[in-house]
Image (tube, rainbow, N blue to C red):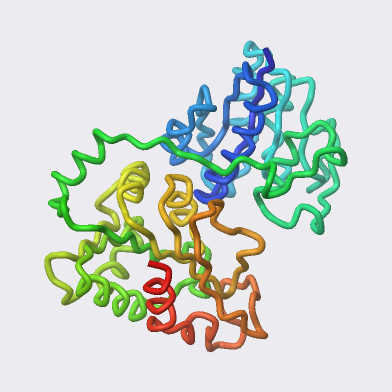
Length: 338
């Protein structure tokens, strides 16, 4: 029985996409034990992945070196006798825990001179591994040339849903049990260049409320002001739930939504992983690199000459890739697909 320690990524969407790796490992090693190291926020998400035995919290802040903390954690894991460690981030510090845990096989991509901490360093071929999920799953393969990851042979991420929590959320949040719901995710932690304008979200929400839907705006506390702008004046069928729910609550609510409209964000990947139809808004980033990993999706992207730029702020100052993707264009395509 093989035992794996995975050093997970630091972003919500990436952690969801990492589930493809966990599922792939279990397909190839049905009795495998998989433990995952991640930030504290990731533990509830990892608990919704049946492939993961333990979520191990790394008590350091994002970007913090925390060498002594990582050394202490590594030493505490030596008794687990892991067979292999897979390090998904490319930073030097991310490889320290498996090194201090004395795990015999430690694999990851080249990055930041990790010559001692990793004993199998793979070159990142960006041409064949053109998506984040392919890079993750490739690290779980023993022979990449014989079995390169493709959309056909990679399992999509899947998150378990808690139906009892769904019922509780409907009651606690006074949601309408008999009215179809649409999830709107307007947050863009990476930067404003990834954010569809709030007035665009507002106009779209208004249209679908008039068509008989209820609107749930989902996000964290920092998205609350934007959520207020979306639901302003829309009445009893528009709910700004930003900061009112936990991340696992968003999992359960999105599973009840008929579809979701989202920026390229972590919650977009959550929606895809619970089987909800996803309408992904792209502009400064590309659906070729971080697509929602589901067959139930539609991508909305103007594909302007200046995009994707992968910048946090529009380098040209106009953010046309988002502003010119008007609500009527998105609404028309959604209505056509329905």
